[in-house]
Amino acid sequence: MKVLLISANREEINMRTWPLGLACVAVATQQAGHEVEMLDLVGAKDPESYIRETVRSFQPELIGISVRNIDDQKMEKTVFLLEQAKEVVEICKSASDAPIVLGGAGYSMFPESVLTYLGVDMGIQGEGEMAFPVLLERIERGADLSGTSGLYLRGRGAQGDRVFVKRLDQFPLPTPDFLWPSLQADQEFWLPVQTRRGCPMNCSYCSTASIEGCQIRKRSPGVIAHWLRQWAELGFSRFYFVDNTFNLPPSYAKELCSLLATISPGISWRCILYPARLDEALISAMAKAGCAEVSVGFESGSELILSGMNKRFNPQDVTQACKLLSKHGIRRMGFLMLGGPGETKETVLESLEFADSLNLDAMKVSVGIRIYPHTALADQAVREGMISADDDLLFPRFYITKGLRDWLYEIVEDWMSKRPNWMS
Image 1 (spheres, rainbow, N blue to C red):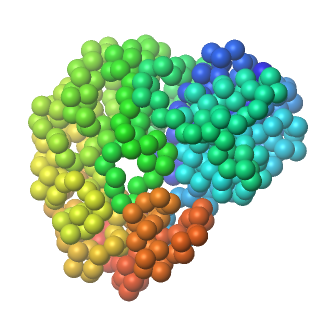
Image 2 (image 1 turned 120 degrees about the horizontal axis):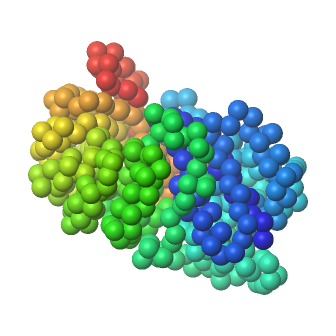
């Protein structure tokens, strides 16, 4: 079957991205015997012409569209990014009669709502590397689609139980065939890498469990190192580990770092750290392996607020982590999320002063917390009357403690105006 895969995302809000998940699905589909073409719309000057020309020349029998983001997660002047996907769907419908299947992280959070909003009949929630080739095979045979893992049909709901594959090594990693050549010369581009899926930390506001599950599932460190070595030999030297918690479990992170340090020529990489269960041995190993920058999502400097978010660390852990990173020459970017449950003017000031004391290289501050379904934050928002129990939350809703909004924006703007490395 001829399959066209399209990444609908066109945003470069923080950095230029590459649709790693869609590329993984593309290579799995290719290995299943299908002819695959993949379009990445980031950087496309004329997305509509690009799609139409590809459809005309390739003549796909099925089109898969990846939905990466629903919105930009900013409470003030929120951008509803699902409109981009809607435009792509309409272009595909007008250019081809091929059936359309949705997927991607954004879709997986709202499988039924997104199908309805975009007017598409099918979508796959979760890992498409396994479910998508199965769906294609059943469509080719004209077989019953019921029982297909992760498949949703519009108006009919889930057709099969969702499966979280434990051994990620059974999924192939994408090849450079699915990467725009121009990205190699882009000094701002960091190639994304995912070594683990799922997160057991259960933070009160987090959507990761809806997308990847709550159990950490891993690729073998040797497989990852071999894959990165191949990219390095092609001239790529900058990588971004998109794992939610690079340092968990610590033994896995240390083994991976020891292998990354053997890649020649040397590489440079970024990652996301959970500021707990860190020791100097790991930080040192990261530095020796080429770690240049770390995002530390500590979210608050108040023990009270951290406890309410179900964080398993305290401000002292964050301070120690940041000192170790600085000692080993690793840039540090911090994150604050202000206005959540229990927040007061006192805890806001406590958090701002705490963040300031860390002397970070960069600091990102957000006001209000995006409410996602199936989270403790959503349950609390219902109890407090902020949202209704039947709100599917596809259209962005934000939690902010009553009475804080105007003051909070004012104080954050004042702090950022005096700190050029702080941003919103």
